[in-house]
Length: 316
Image (cartoon, rainbow, N blue to C red):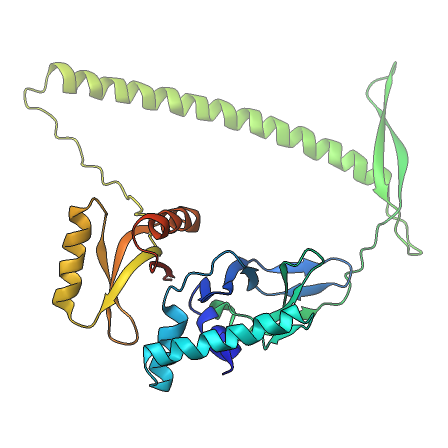
């Protein structure tokens, strides 16, 4: 049995795929990246990792294979455990277990399983069709600068010296910087004069508007017998999306799913129906969460105390 093919299929839709009595393959979203040395651009992706501590059978992998092969859950579970035994034997013999499009498993010097992920396949469905590419290097040209002094006569007794920074053009023609500097001074003086006039006009308009508002407030307060109806305000509140669900079970009969929800609520859980899966089963969650960290913490607690078969579902 080629378990790697089934695991690869599930990694597109789930962040955790557990292989019974062996470990779990996890995926974590990684944003787009730019390699500044090679000028290579990489699209967003999912990074695959391995956790040898998560060995409890959550039923996801076995049920998926059983539904595809129509071989029954128990028979499929035995085949999966047989394949896991072969993996463990290969690792014990210092061999490398290569899983296509997932990565390589081997034992380190301490006897622990180490995992080297494969980057041949992007499991992030939203990045479908995007591939990495290398861009040509961007050339930047920095122009040399030099200072020129322009003397502007202010009166017969004193003069003013102004330092200007001008770009040294690499052409045979030289721009008349002295005349440009004098023109810039004249334009600046005109601009500041206009800004001062505009500021005075704004102050006058604001004073006039304030007087008008004060007059209206006085009329509304002292001369209007009828109360003034204020306009209503509508606040837009963004609801947090809960995409992480700790699944309690899946039922083919919807009535049984509702019964499970009521049972969990009676035991203090914020249980709910989270819709049908592609097999037509009604899924029930212990609770739903907005972040993966909250969901993982709740899943661990539920597995240890109540339901070892509980598992994590991520919806988009």
